[in-house]
Amino acid sequence: MVLMMDREYRPSEDEPFMNEEQKAYFRQKLLRWKDDILRESRETIQHLQTENENHPDIADRASSETDRSIELRARDRQRKLISKIDAALARIDEGTYGYCEETGEPISIRRLDARPIATLSIEAQERHERRERVYRDE
Image 1 (cartoon, rainbow, N blue to C red):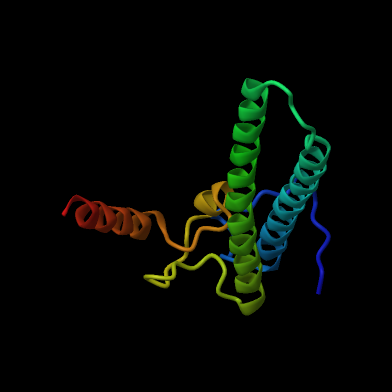
Image 2: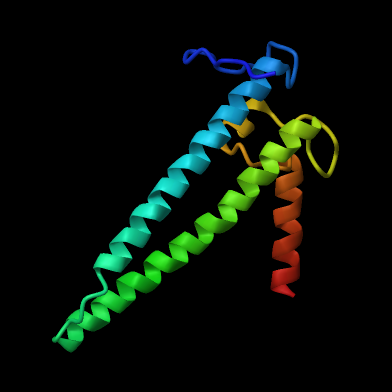
């Protein structure tokens, strides 16, 4: 079942958690985000193909290569982000979206709205980051 989203709808903590309207809202948000990333990627590929000119000046060539390297790293991060978006969409289909992978408790609507690919509640994320810092400092 596909729900058409009212552009004004904003999920709130005052309604049943992960009701059909909230699921549809987050699905649309994730799909729009993915579409934006894919569009930017296509534009980058077109830009890199047209930028493939031979610069006679070594400084221009070095600058062009640096720009190209930065752009490719950004695209790689976005490729990883797309896989997280796809995983979030799969969780919506499975009925596990919005629930903390560590505790099983609902992730706050505000957190999901800000970071729709979140898999941990704020508390669980903070514990995770503290553990990472401890292991990194050792």
